[in-house]
Each structure stands twice: as C-alpha cells, then as structure tokens.
Image (cartoon, rainbow over all chains, first blue to last red; front, side, top):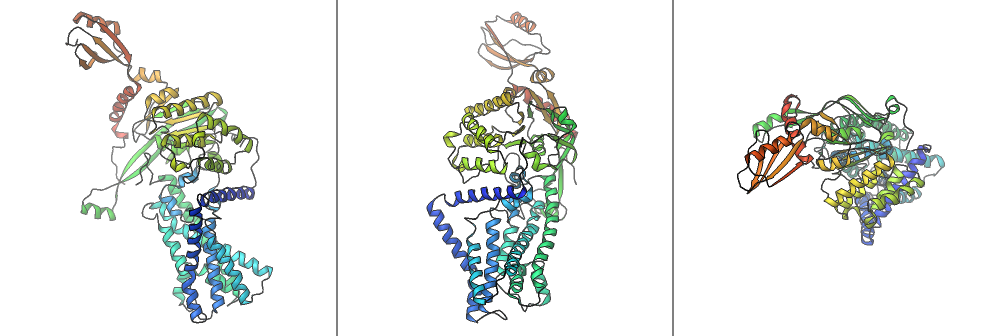
Length: 284
Length: 351
C-alpha cells in the first residue's frame, strides 16, 4: 500500500485473528435461538465424546495402569486439542480437502496474504468453536488438581508445547490426506472429515498394551497416540522422560511431510486450476 | 498501493505483458458403455484442449481492453493467469512488473478481480461486514477506506442493502456489492470476467457507467470479458478477439469492422411485393413492399446499389444502418472457428 510501511507479521496476524473473531461473533449472534441452541449442542457433543471412556474408567476404577483421574486427564487433554482445532481451524480450514475440492481455494489465493498466514488465521472461531476447548481446559485443571501434579512453570510450558505439538500433528495429518483433493477434487473432497473423525473417535483410548506393529501404526499412519495418549503420559510422568519430546518431534516430521505434499499439490492446482468450478459456474 | 516493483515493463508503462503463453487442459474421454467405462479405469483416455496457444498481449496503464471470443476461446483462462490462479505451461506472464504466481501475495493486493459467477461476499453476513473484513485482510489504511467507501456506496447504490445479508440479495445487488468489494482497495488493474452476466438492462448500464467513470477519473486499467459486444463497445476503446486460443484481432472497433466486414443493412420500400435483386447484396427479409438486405460496405458502392434498385423498380423510401456489433462478431466467430482447425480445441489428441 502506498505511503505505508508493511506491518510486523505478528501484528498483522493479530489483526487477522481479530477480524475472524469479529465475523464469528456476528455469526453466532445472528439470532438468539441460534445462539442458545448452538452452544447447547456443542456442550452436549463434547461431553458425549468423552462419556464411553469415562464410564469405563469409573466402572473399573481406572484402565490398566491409568487411574480414573489420569484417564480424565488424558481425555481432557485430547478434548482440548480437538477443541483448539475447532477454535483455530474452523470454517473448513482443517477440512482443507473440501476447500480444494469445491474450488474455494481460489478465494484464498486472491487475498494478499501468504497462504500459511491465511491457514493460521482464517478459521479462527473463538465464539462458535471454543466449546470443546473450554470444557477440555476446565477438565484438565480439575484432573490436574485431583492427581496432585506439582504445577510448576516448566510443567505449564511443557503442557503448552505438547498441546501446540498435538494440534500441529492433527493439522499436518489432515493436510496430508487433504492434499489428495488436488489430484482428485471430487473423490477426495471429504477425505479430511473422514481422517479427522477417525482421530476424534479413537483419541479417548489409552494405547498401552498394544503390540509394537499396531502401536507403530497408531503413531505413524494414524497418529492417534499423539493426540492424547503419549503427551498425557509425558505430562503425568508415566514412563521414560523422552516421551515428552516425542510429540513435538512428531509434529515437526509430520509438518515437513505435509508441507512437501501440500506444496506439490499446490503446483498441480496452478497447472490445472480449480477443477470443480467451470468458467460458466457449474460444479463438476 | 504498494510502490511498483522496478522493472523494464513498468518503466514503459505496460502493466500487463503476456509473451508466448500456452495453456493446455486435459479432458477425460469415455462413452456411456460398460466396456468403455471399465477400460477407462485402467487406461484412461484424454483429449487435450489448447486454451491458449502462444498468446502475446500487452496492456498499457489506463487502457480499457475488451477481451472477447466464443465459448472455450481462452478468455477466463487468461483472467485466471492474471489473477494468480493459474500458471502458464510455457511463456511468461507479467503484470505490474511481477509474476502473478510467484509474487502472488504482493501482486493481488494491487489488482481487483471479479468473476461474474462467484462472489467474495460472506454469505451469512451483512454486506457491510464483508467490506470491513476486506479492509483488514487487504490492510487498507483507515483514512483511505473511509474516503473510498462512501463514494463506492453512493455510485453503486449500495446504501439500500448495505446492512442486508448477502444471501438475501438479488443477483444485480450482489454483483454491485462484489464490484464495490473489488474496488475498495483502489486497485491499479481491474479484471472483470463476465461481470454483467445475468443482470438486467438497468443494472448493466449502471455497472458500465461506474467503471467508465472510475477509469476517466482515476485512470484505472480495465480488462473485461463478456459475450455482450454492445456492452464491450460502449466501454472499451480496444478489443482483443480470441479464437481457438490465439489472438485473432487486436485493435479498435472501427478497424475491426473494416478488416472483417463493414456489414450494413439496407431497407427499401417499393410499391409492389417483388424485391429488387442484387449481385452484391443479400436479401434477408421481405414483407409486402418492405425489403431488407445486408451487404459489405467495404466492397459495395452504396450510390451504385441504389441506382441499380431504382433501375429495377420505383423506390418509395430508403434506410441504411450499420449492423449491430453482435452481428459482426458472430460473422467473425464463424470464420475463425472453422478457419484454423489445427489449433482448435476440436482437434483430438490423446495422452
């Protein structure tokens, strides 16, 4: 822009999060009925998602080496992770295959901001998407106090790093699958929602006792272990200390692979263009 | 606007430059038969469609360029190349001294794009919210936004529905709001891909008038595609005709008419129903004593034609007028579509 210096990227991202939050607030307050029912349904879904494992843990006084409170901690952790995804990557940013498949990536590409900035800021929905995050964080605080963990600055830092790393794994996993839509926009349009449903459905279960092949699969091809189980073990001090570093490392590796595939897909998009919208507007 | 990047093209005031640009798409081919369907699962067949075939084009700052051609000629592909949405297979695309794909984030902040079939408005929000969103995402300085918005609201008549939900707008209202969105950051070039499609006559006229005023006042460079030739002729001083992915004509409207066909209509009124016959004018309609002909004014001498008519019968009245530009273009399309089948999208090629 003429006569104006480029703002610092952090300031710019804060502004973009701000406008996304404002648009979200406008949406949830469109009418009172929508406001009440939306939040009611969100809360109900978050509780329902945890109920099976919670009831099992309560009935048998824990699951394997995990006490009931530790199970609640793990559930709370994974709920906070998925809640953070809904809060920060809503609006089909997490379900990127839908955007690619439906040709909506074009709308992002005509905006004057780097794609990674758009991905990190465009889906921020703190009002409509934060129900699970708030419930997860509340349960985390409650279970932490019941377990009697020494909450030090270092532990809080580890918690925040682990949460961010788990979110990065979920995002990278979704983009890995979602990139398929660059090559098959119609066939892979819903692949992200399927991969995310799988992570959501399996995240409440502790993976202790699984054989090495199955466990390896749960940490690579379907990285469910990084959404709750492994970081919770690290935070609860269960097992060797390297576990605490495993999730950030996995986030880095998944991020590199996802970024590589996504960029390759973007080049294909530049070659073929949006395949679902033709120039005269019909969807294929 | 950001300071223009130093380059040879910007120094010459050329804001758009396409050099030898080619773009080919593949279309899957198969019939409805089961055997063909199964074969295609293993060995899919494709046909190559050459959307752009070595296109060279330059646009200078402040020009309004009509970019026309029959369906599938490559118009939208060109607009997408210039909007950072597509990369060329070969050749170079430069605009405002930048590569639209490589410099995307910086470049799109200085252009405006409007696709007639798409909307940039937030569907479940009032129009005003979309404008505010754009202000932040495009990082438009507040003072400039506050200066531009009232003018755009007034000129495009947005006030009546500025606080209405985008999903509840009529097509005409939606297009006006979208045009306002495309202009609120004061772009240097405006790309319009069929911006008036589906609009009624009044909405169309208002939109064209607004673009014309903006061009006259601010020197905005505009490139627009449309199938409505009258509309293009009203707005643009230069027409680029695309056919089969190639530029078939690039010049002004007078030259276009002269080069291709200065088609005229002649209407004669005679006391009887028998129409005079001419070797160099074609009778297209006859109704009682009223006979209408078309002829090429570049090759036919009008006084001689009238003298010949007077020799054959008594003439009560004479009218002559230029053929509408749509008719001229239709004739040109017919010629172009079938004159170079080797470069046509109709030529099959398998991959």
